[in-house]
Length: 159
Image (cartoon, rainbow, N blue to C red):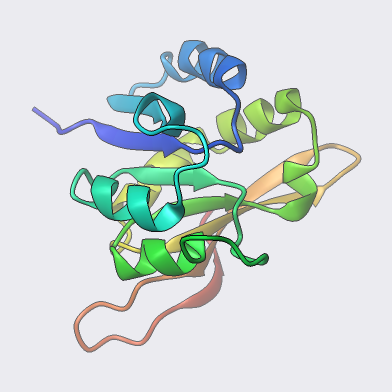
């Protein structure tokens, strides 16, 4: 029996948006466990508290936090890499879109998001808008966590 892939959404995805995703992604043939950060930790919990706490579970974290702004508790992408947590980061343009657009982007890229679980722990993927008129999105490997004796990969299309 296959182990379900765990996906953890942080506060960038609201609970109502997550409810819509649960219905849609339930049609996927891949066994998944989908959770929201707010069901595990109080709102505003610093990243340096919750990331180490969830690292052992090996979830894929879906977030809009690109680590561009100073924050208490460190930068999420740096912490995810350090603790071996694979993460998918919304582009700035996607994060500014309404919840419906985020749901659409996640559903359009769901199988790719699930496949990130086979990347080295701590790898970072970006979910980008590649055509704003047709609203096409693409999941791109931004930084693969280096394996033993390997050089990290940079900016590679995943699909």
